[in-house]
Image 1 (cartoon, helix red, strand yellow):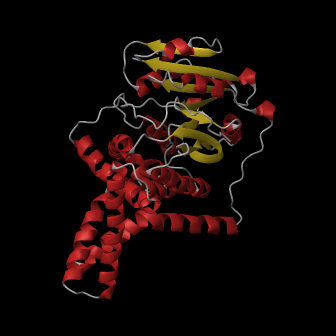
Image 2 (cartoon, rainbow, N blue to C red):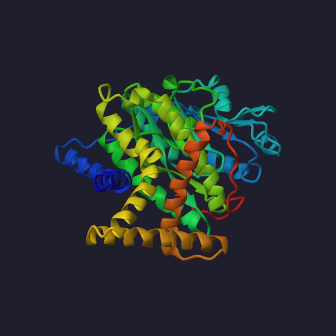
Image 3 (tube, helix red, strand yellow):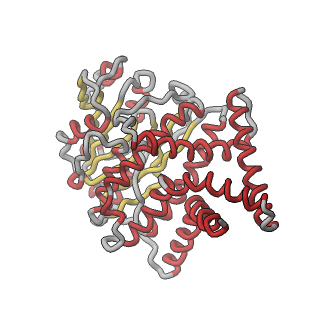
Length: 400
């Protein structure tokens, strides 16, 4: 029982903390050896041609803010094309997009999902680079410049931007927890890219070389992740550009965030089943190491081991195996007590910041377990279920 406890605890700690520490140490060693990756200087005249693609479904409340933000982005205008693609919308999203002659609008009344919409618009793209961005995000002014300058290096197949979460003046457990998570995730992505490659991109903002685009099956749940990982699977690097920022409105509450997380977790399991080549360490050992450490363990082993460790620790505490087990068990009890308090306060619209991270951590891991069940039971479809946000528009959101 003690062996199982310590092995399980090791995998949990490694997944959520240890990999980050090891990754940072490897990056420091790389810098010490003088192998820090440098971003090529790109003359504005040598920038690649670029298409911005926005897939939207029922985003009438925010779509004109998105359009204004997109048209104002800094980039040589003669090299830039805009595509907005909608399908099955029941509001005025396509009509509002149609008012802007600079934008190529592709609309169909049938709702087939985001990946089908992306495949449809990619058939019309002729530029060197494609930038994908969600309709409910606003980009920093130089986002396109910051992403596209990386393509001066022929080994770069994709470039991902940084996601930020905006919750307005009020931040509850869902917003604060998600914001903290993405700050940590951004640090891991930065170190991943410096060591070798980012393992997957978020749909809020990422770009690819157009010629490397590979259609993924229409039932793909995490299309952005799969598109970028297929490129990494071919031997190209996926870089991370933190100066290219995509700011997204926070989920309305934890219930809404949970819907999104369960879907992502189900998509994570699907991705693991389909990206078998990345799991082969003989093809690209560094990428395999990063992929397993950063993604696979989070989406499979670690969430299952959390209750195992809690139960085993309780048994070891009750059988008086020593002070260390007592300390660890009391620590777990305190952590989960804070999570429970966070749950109760969330339902009463009260806030104590000390409960945000424990509560969000538990919600996130519950979502993984629920996502695993949903995927293997065949209940998770590829079409997004729209998540309600804290506010309909960004209002005076500062975008830097």
